[in-house]
Length: 203
Image (cartoon, rainbow, N blue to C red; front, side, top):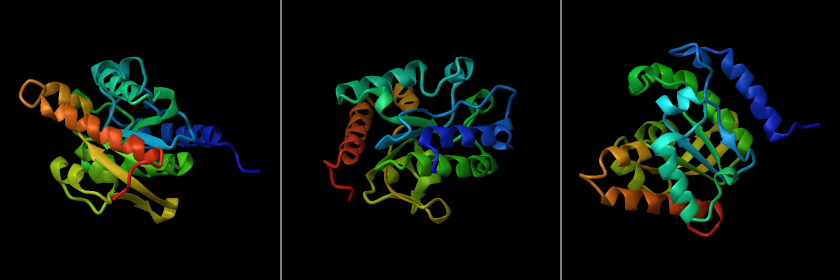
């Protein structure tokens, strides 16, 4: 008998906690994905920040508030999607994760996606976007402008449409200089939501 997605996620997270990816940086526990384990839309961030590390929950604080407000405007309850991070631990001083740390963590994210089986994945930021995209394009401007990106992994039986947009933390840091980027991110999120509902074209 096949176990439920929730039970499979719990088993995955037990392995994660005991792994090198789960022991990165600090003694704190990994910040795990949350939401609907059978969601049509999975949202992937880069790594937990200070607020997430302290609570611990994925995507809370100002970045989480901004993401939640956009989802509410699209009439998408937070608990109807699945939200997770590429790196499950907070990097020291919130620095960018190193390539070796991404390589440790990516297999767990891919297995996470293979359990949830979404219709579309939304990556917030260039780091998760490049880790997941096939093929990769580098800069966030190229990633977000490219249609037809996919998350592909033969070992995990994954071939899922991918949308990449700005990370909410970046939007908040640069809002005064680049206010239009907030509208761009909201439109990208809307496209991902519509794709997950079968409304928008994937290409």
